[in-house]
Image 1 (cartoon, rainbow, N blue to C red):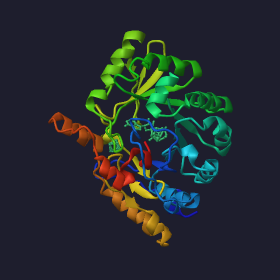
Image 2: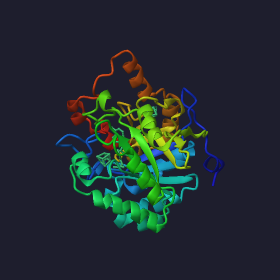
Image 3: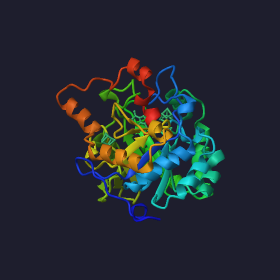
Length: 352
Ligand code: SAM
Ligand code: SF4
Ligand code: SF4
């Protein structure tokens, strides 16, 4: 092993933010149609031949880790729809610079895959769970698979996953009456609940500011039931601010809409077909598939990634917030026609 491979370079963007966390979208397909993410009737999919093979994902991840990435999150679309995902996890485990491999899933296929994922060496799972009511789940997702999600959560705990997180998109008038129930459910199964503010990302064509349940409103709602909520001081670039109730229960809030945290953002995203996005809100990504398939050397690709990160100025959520201050935050980020022309603009293509 040469020196460069054993000690990752530290690369900073224009604001000094390091390149640390990589979200790998392994498919753009999904078995749900959550209305905050995929509310339209029809979608176009990335052509199959453009999807990165596991070997290609491994090779690209390897060069990212040479530049400082040490955390990888598998996402999508629904990542468990990608066949043989445990094989990719095993391959990634061979890269010793990766200290954490996590997965974000809607949980539907988790019961059948939890054991294989655990055996492959997956470190952490986050399951998206917006409601405990099956009829509400149906109206949110246009699918009738709520029971499978709950079974998936239980199975993942049974096979040995610890530190399970449950992510809930909190929406006014939809699930604001369930925050306490979700916390209680988390306590019961031993999982940490995190509330995510509804974001106006690409694909969220139903978004409006009026539907956003803000961090302050969430804290007020929960404080009424549990008493004073204490913020936990942590030196972390994680998107969630964590809090503790007087009874010791910990939960998190990802306040991307009302309190963006771009200042410490070390995350970037690779789509299933190899486009690299420096921000959830970025309109364009850098195609890494084409040069990889053309045989461009690892050193050249690494230099390309490094120079892009060093030029990074993205602070998408903060810019959206700035527009709001002057009354210019239009109801949706990207028009439907534009989303149809370029599916990469969709949240389900670039991963949450
Ligand atoms: N399909 C998987 C899932 O749902 O967990 C992984 C991909 S999904 C895009 C990742 C996360 O993004 C989910 O937790 C989902 O709730 C969140 N998400 C999608 N659209 C969102 C929006 N408009 N605002 C906030 N979070 C959103
Ligand atoms: Fe829902 Fe995740 Fe699928 Fe989007 S990608 S529709 S959030 S399950
Ligand atoms: Fe990072 Fe962009 Fe999200 Fe800000 S909006 S936290 S820069 S991904």
